[in-house]
Each structure stands twice: as C-alpha cells, then as structure tokens.
Amino acid sequence: MFTRLNKIYHEFSPLFWIVVAVRFIDGIGGTLLFPFFALYITQKFNVGMTQAGILLGMSSLFGLIGGIAGGALTDKFGRKQLILFGLIFSALSTLTFGLVTDIKALYPIIIVVGLLSSISHPAHEAMVADILPEEKRQEGFGILRVVGNLAWIIGPTIGGFVANINFFYLFVIDSVISCIVAAIIFRALPETKPAPHAHAQSESILETIGGYRHVLKDKAFTAFVVANILMLIVYQQMYGTLSVYLRDHHNINPQGYGFLMTSSAITVVLFQFWVSRLIKVRPPFLMMAFGTVFYMVGFALFGVFTAYFLFVLNIVIITIGEMIVVPTSQALTANFAPEEMRGRYMAFFGLAWTIPSTIGPGAAGYILDNFNPNLLWYVGGLLCGVSVLAFYGLHLRLGARPQFAPAKEENQPLETVPLS
Image (cartoon, rainbow, N blue to C red; front, side, top):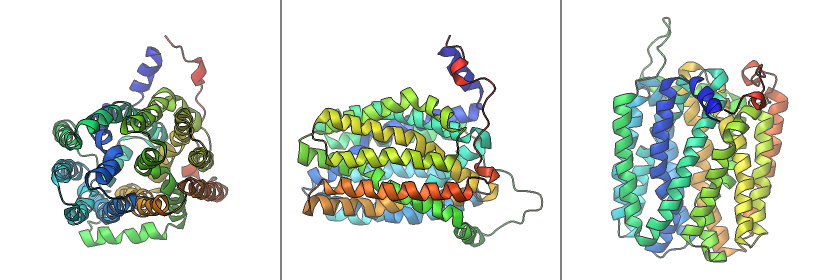
C-alpha cells in the first residue's frame, strides 16, 4: 500500500499537494457547520423547512451572481487574491450568522454573504486546472474528493456533538479555520494564472465579463451544465433537506445524520483512488450517465426505506455515483474551457450547483411541509432519470471529440502494482 501511495504522490507536483492540504483543512471547517445549517435555522428561529429553504435559496441566488462576477475576475486578475478574499470574508460572515438573534436580520445578511462569498469559487477550480496537466485532471480531482471526504469523516462527527452542546461554537470554529487556511495560502501558494500569449491583447474588465457570450454560445457546454442541474437539484438534498426529513419523520438526531455523512466519506476514502483510475480510461459522458443511475436509485429509496441501516445503504449507493460523477464533471469542464477562459467556464459550471441550491431547498421544503414527504424522493429519482438520458445523449454527440477522449490504458494495470 505504501508503494502505491508513494507512486501516486510522485505523479503530481508539490503545488498540487499544497492545494490538497489546504482543501483538507478548510473542508474540516466547512463540514463542521454546513450539514447542520438547516437544523440551526429551524431550531433557533422555530420556523419550518419552507422558510429555511427560502433563506438557503436566497444565498444561492445571490451566490450565482457573485460566482459569475468571480469567474471574470479570476480570468482578469488571477486566482490567489480572490481565494484569500473569499476566505477572510467567509470567516467574518460565518461569525455574523452565529450572532444573529432575529430571523428578519438574516435576509439582508444572506444577500451580502451570497454575493461576496461566491466570488472566489471559480478561482479555486481554475487554480487546480492550472496546476494539473489535462491527462491528470480527472484523477487529480478524484484525489481532492478523497481529502474532502477525509474532512467529512472528521467534520460532521465532531459537528454533531458540538451542535448538541451549542450551535454557536460551530460558527466560531469554522471562522478560525478559514483564517488559518488563508495564512497558509498567502505564504505557500504562488499565483497560477497562465501568462497571456505574446499576441494576446489586454482586456478591460467589461470585455472580460463580456466574454461570457462565448461561453453561452458553446451549446454543447450549456447542455452539459443543464444536465448537471437536473441531477444536482436532487443530490444537494442530501446536505440540508435530508437532515430535517430524517429528524421530523424518522426521529433521527443530528448525531445520527452526522454518521450517515461520515459513512459516505469513509466510502470515498476507501474507494475513490481505485474508482478514479478505473473510470479515467472510459468515455467520460458515459461515466456521467452511469454515475447518475446510482443517484436515481439511492435517492428514490429514501421514500421506501424506514430502517436506519437501510438509510446508510442508500448513502453508500449515492456515494458510489458521487465518486464517478464529481471528478468526471470537473475534468470535463476544464477540458471544455479554452485556457484563457477557465475562470469563466468554471463559473458558468457553477450554475449547476447554485441554481439547484437556489430552487431546491425551497421546493423540497414546500413538499415536506405540505405533501407526503416521501414524494420528494420519488420526484428526485425521476429527475435523475432524465439527467441519465441527457448525459447519454451528450456521449453520442460529443464522445468522439479529441478533448473528451478517455485516457489511454497504462502499460501496467493497477492490479499488478506491488502493494508493499
């Protein structure tokens, strides 16, 4: 095992491993708080999931605007400055959320935080794409998935215990971690934005923003984003709505929900390396369709199962799909993008996350509060099924293009690499 890990380590640059380390540290802070935010709102302010969903949706709506601006700023000014801004602002805004005592005050705060906290998101993904060569991106994003889920093993488990003591402590810990990560990035990471070509003309900021016209004209990429939106509307229910559903309809407390998230993380840590190497030699759009099938099955079964151990099984099924879909979608986005437009392509792909975050919680909350709650998961399975068909259609249309060709088989299969 040590030999295999050492081989993987030397296949990537030191800069990439610095990014891996800071993602892990920052991930611990995020996973301490994020899975319990909907519980915090409904419990502290004594409101239903519909109102909590509206607040979360507002955050995502204004985050969409901030992310679009951030993509243009990333291509114009670089990655590092925006990442540092995002971390410091995140620390301040997280503390503000924890100090609010009137739910009415959350609405203007949500707008400001949504706008500014998302500006740095495209810069994170563009930096990874800068550092990784094209043939290593899918596997590199898979490694980031592993360390992110190592954080999920630690974060939700601790967060569940802390939330039972005092929710405010979660906000304090997350703020401190954001400041630590900002200090590491400031000291250890250089700017990674590619130098402009000798013949390239300097753009004004308005011209850079106007470059989104090129992204919108890329109909194949737009179709890819839409297919992701359908699937991610369902997937994101796992990180908010599911905790409320399990609490209200199956009497599962935050610690039980935290263990479900930890079981997902353990699955990724154990199998993501193997899955990444297995799928990188297969057609990527076909892998997107295949992975989404697991989402379709896993989420639909939440409306069928009632036993806790079966909920754990559902999470594992969904996680199998996640191990296939997430690194593949990130690598595909980087391969769609011209080098000088990576920030804007990454920002536009961010719509696949922010649009579901905007409409998903409110719509899910409305179903939970007014209809049979199991209906939420049946509708989710149906949406994932439509997404499967969309990804398969993209495979038929785009699969033969060189930038979407799977990686070549290595000379030595993974199974023959010595384990010690």
